[in-house]
Image 1: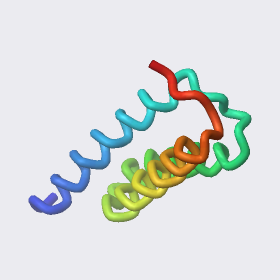
Image 2: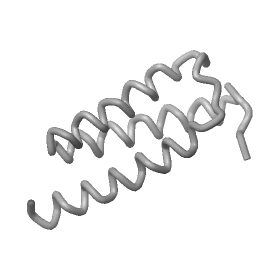
Image 3: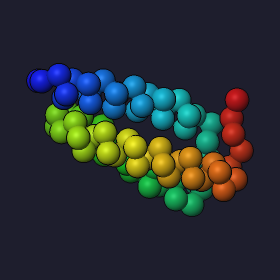
Image 4: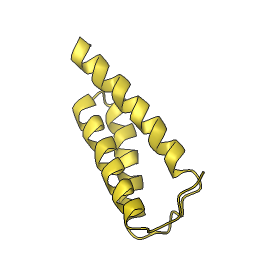
Length: 79
């Protein structure tokens, strides 16, 4: 694994962990939440496949959807 791949892996794992923390206590039945969860699952799959570019993209997509839902007030923020 080269330095770029290692950095992508580390960053993806960091943001995946933060995503999981952020999802705790969120209503999983909110419309579009299934997309957040699907991208999270894709991230895990791509990490297992050592496809670090796609893993990074998937975790960023999940974050983008989640933050959009939060800004639209689709659910209450948890503390």
